[in-house]
Image (cartoon, rainbow, N blue to C red; front, side, top):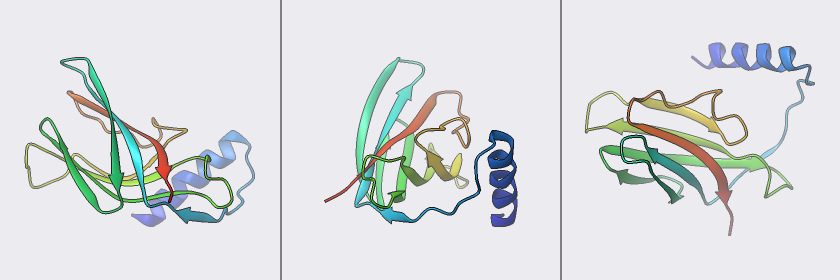
Length: 122
């Protein structure tokens, strides 16, 4: 699975004409996600600590980790998330969500949209 993600990332970097430079990342203490309920039209910003799980309607969201570029606290957030709908066994989403490119690895759900906004620091 990691090999596939690495290949996809390398393809995207090449397609955008960006240099494939590794960037040091710092782990924040948590992060902020924006959640949209498409049925009610309600949006909320949820603050998470790393490892914390919160429920939003029928969606359980766990933020395992939030990272940002070292030396740039306001830089792009990368959140490792797991989302389970209605207590099902299989998650509807598991992976990294990138704040500046939410469509790159998005939650595909008929009722909810979730975006990573930023990481929290001490």
